[in-house]
View 1 (cartoon, rainbow, N blue to C red):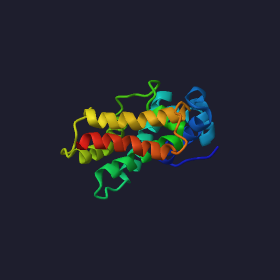
View 2 (cartoon, one colour):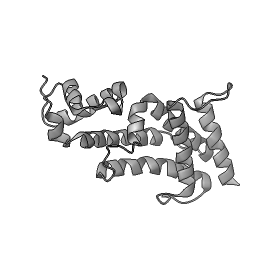
View 3 (spheres, rainbow, N blue to C red):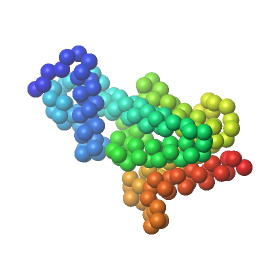
View 4 (tube, rainbow, N blue to C red):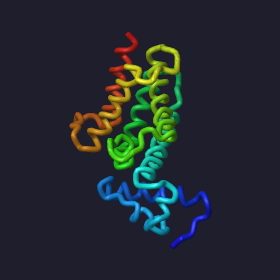
Length: 194
């Protein structure tokens, strides 16, 4: 077994959790297998995260942080509607890159939804998209949590991602998912700018 100095084990367990989720999904996830993949004893995950819910919550918080980073990497260029479209593509692309991670983030399952890190990173991702919506609508930021326009944009990109992951969305032959996402958000932007 590998030995990790203090601080590195928690990250190694999160890395192993991500790989295990990608391979086996939530149904095939176990602390024991995660520990084996991290090269530590089967009790190590419980020491750092308490239980499966603790480890998966920490991984989901890391995943929301990654989503927020992907959304915030889309720089506004003076065209608010275009920036929102590019954020939508970043959102769906993030989901499609590792679908098991994305599905965990929104799973009704074992996550501790009141976890401070999960709440903070989820709000940071929401705020990135909400700020882009505010720019399109000409409203001041920050938009309040649950704002209808921001929720509509989130629902649009989330729905596209979920439908694509589950192979339930038939795309027009002349458009890939990127163009489809951009078109949907362009339509929303036109509605808001009237």
